[in-house]
Length: 125
Image (cartoon, rainbow, N blue to C red; front, side, top):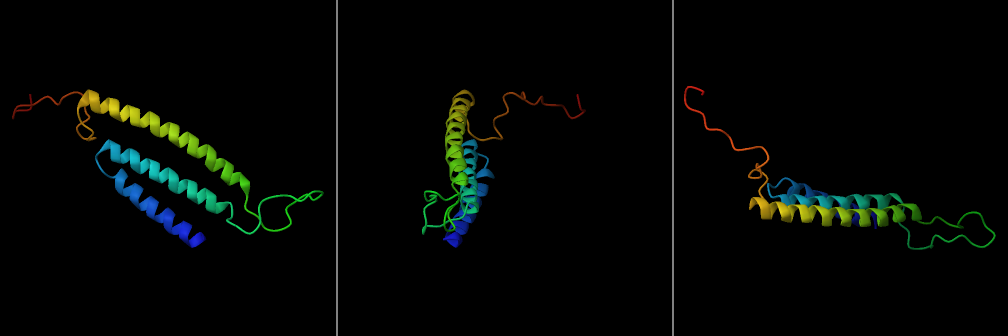
């Protein structure tokens, strides 16, 4: 199971880096979402994956009887999913507003705040 998870994390990371290297801001945003999902899978794998025993403590015992999965990383992942979805919704809104205002999603063409370059003559003035 861990090998499959490692392969999924590798594929998600490779796809996210590929998307984040594009000049389109929308592709960068989708790459960021894929990278956050890969990080969530790494945290899940760090919490031990078992399907044999549920993480329940028998009555009167102070610890589970067998090796179980740690529920803390699972709770952290649930929190990260909610925060990631909120970040994605906010960033997507910003991207769509920027596209409406600037007319492009190419990061090289989004230079409205930097001003237009002033053409110079051959003598430098």
